[in-house]
Image (cartoon, rainbow, N blue to C red):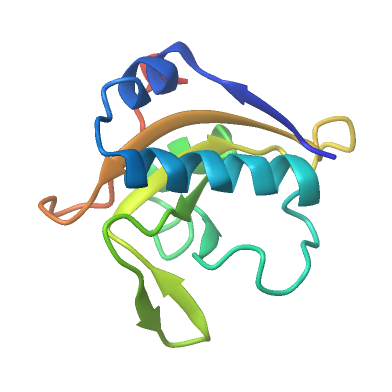
Length: 133
């Protein structure tokens, strides 16, 4: 259903992961994206929160402008654990960032994985930089 592509940065970054459980969480998520897509998956397929990366940012901030311009989204992958959040979804420290231009009919079923990072130790939300895209 969905075409999943990878940036060179994402491929290099995830090749460094040695924890099999962490690798499996990423691979399982990718498999589910391919099979069910992101627009209307069956309930319970994605445990973690999927969200536009510009959400909750100041619309005048450079990060908001960058994230929206590049159609950046993120998924809480569940590494190391999921945490229940208000609204009935789960968040985690580790995020997979991806490009998803769902407003473009030709690109609604294509994502490009570009970044994988933790935000536990950062004071700002981690966004990929332009060279990672």
